[in-house]
Length: 224
Image (tube, rainbow, N blue to C red; front, top):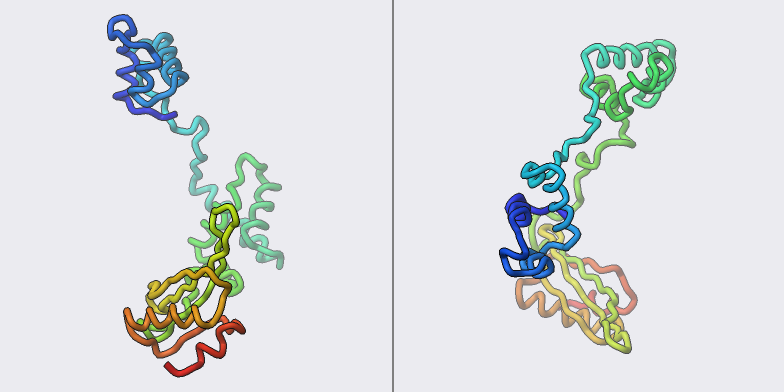
C-alpha cells in the first residue's frame, strides 16, 4: 500500500515503550496495516533513515529512444515495399525491417504507424476512419424530439419484485425530462402518466419517439 512520507517518518520514529502504545494501536490510529508498518521498519533497519523514502517508480528498462536513422529506415522500407507492388502498411513495414535488422533494432508496429502517419504516407481508408470523424445524428434544439423507453428492474427484496421504469430523454440535450417507476408490467397507461408529468414540468415536444412496443402504440399516437 502506498503511504505518504509523513506517515513513513512517524513509523520510523515510533517506539512502543516510549510512546506507551502497542504496534496494533499505532497502526489503527494511522490507518495502516501491520505488514506495512513492518515493511517500512525493515527498510529503515537495512538502509537507515534513507529507507523512509520510497523507491523510485521509474521503469528499470525505459522505452527505447529512436534516432533519425531509425526513422529514415522505416520510410525507406515503406517505399521499397511500394515499389515492389507489395502491401506497404505499418505491419508489412515492421516485418520488412524485422527481417533486415532483427527484432532489437525494429520499432514497434504502433511506432511505425505513427511515423508513417506523420510523414503523410498513410492511405486514408474510409472503413477505418477515426470515430471522432463521425457526427452523431440528433436534433439541434431542445424539445424538438423526445424519446421514451421502458426497462424492467428487479428489487433486492425476498420476492425480487419487478418494477418497470419509464424514462423520457430529450434528444438534443440528452436531458432526462421524466423518469417514473411503476409496480406493473409495461403498459400504455403508465407510459402516458410519465409523459403527462414531463409535459407539465417542461412542455410538449414537437415529436415523440418510442420503440413501437405493442403496449404503447395505441396510447401514444392519441392526440394530447
